[in-house]
Amino acid sequence: MVRSVTAVLVLMIFPGLMAGQEPVLQVPARATLEEVVHFDFDETAITSEAELLLRAKLPILRDSAAFLLLLEGHADERGSIEYNLALGGRRAESVREFLTGLGISPDRLTTTSFGEERPLVSRSDAEAWAQNRRVEFVITAVTVGTVAVEPVGGIEPTPVAAEPVVVGDVEVATPTAEEPPPIVRTRPNFERDRRSRFYRDPRAASMVQARSDPDDLWVARSSVWSAEWLGAASLEAVEFDGRIESLVTESEIRTAFPYTWVRLDLEPGFRVRLGDALQIYRPARVNPELGVVLRPVGVMSVTRVAPNVVEGLVLEVFGLVHEGDLFRPAPAYDMRPGQVPGRVTRRSAATVIEFGEVHQLYGLRHVVILDKGTRDGVDMGDEYVAFSGDGSTEQVIGRLRVVLTEEETASAEIVTLEGPVFQIGTALHLDRKMR
Image 1 (cartoon, rainbow, N blue to C red):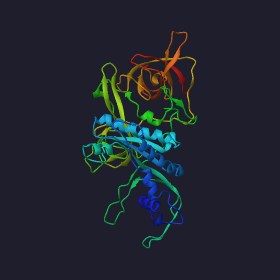
Image 2: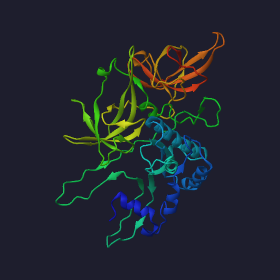
Image 3: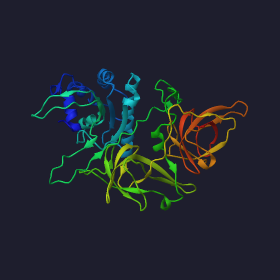
């Protein structure tokens, strides 16, 4: 009887092992789907060669709507770690925008970046650098139809019911009479984010975003979990519920990527349960007048709870995740599709007091910290605007959406922008309020 996920995947890929039905994805199609695309030095633009490879993937993606892809961005070793991590992310996003522009659903494509951490060729020359500037394609999930399995080695066949099979979802070792029961680490299957109501329109020349379908989420969960916030007054007073003790890996890598298991060190009195979502973060900088700006670097799920060991699986990364990083329960998220704010008749005011990151200019998706929080009635999804005018003919020149609330402050994401609008001290006015 075929029981393991690995066996099901082998049967799916090789048609000779199935009776009466073609496999969902044959080897040549899988090879085309996973073929790597490369980039020019310090570039994110799709080259003509890369475009041909991407267009070759389209028929497979269109004919097999059950396949989900993870786009992994990479860079060569030149440049700083931080710069290359961002560059790899932009390359992955460039591929994602190209495919979605040709009709592939955004819900089927997720992106991540490894920067220079995982070179394909371990040399320092022009040929190696050209190979390392790439985006790789990883099949993260696929739906398999009901099939009948031929007997293998005298073992009686059994039907395999249609169900989602997540590649690498479960690591199972078969126990023997002399061995203790195996440790089973499951990979959580959180519901994927739907596209937020505002998304970047690649056809637009300005920095104004276009509206999407009315059933999309007003605030994406990834925006909530990746937003910086203002913490305690000093580094010594920063609150946390635990730290990442170590990475569960046999290699020398000390940076956690998606689907890396980590061992957790909990603070006394903090309890977790299987499946709990935890936000990983670290102090970014200290504002002497306001406090510590805290920056999320990832989200993980608790996958093992034992008397002396607690482990988690990193699901998403927003930066480099290291041993010693702090964690807390992920901020509550209860946004529903179609839930939108309404216009207000009385525009209460707020002021920009900090930014999530330090830049000379701020653009779309950057986080702004406001001096109003839940104590002042601010809710996730509220929108504030900045005006320009002489008092009689005012025009909205920038819009912010609240993605995270604390008691005294709120973190908001820039969703529309006309020029360098936001700076410390910018006055904002409430324009839409969640009901």
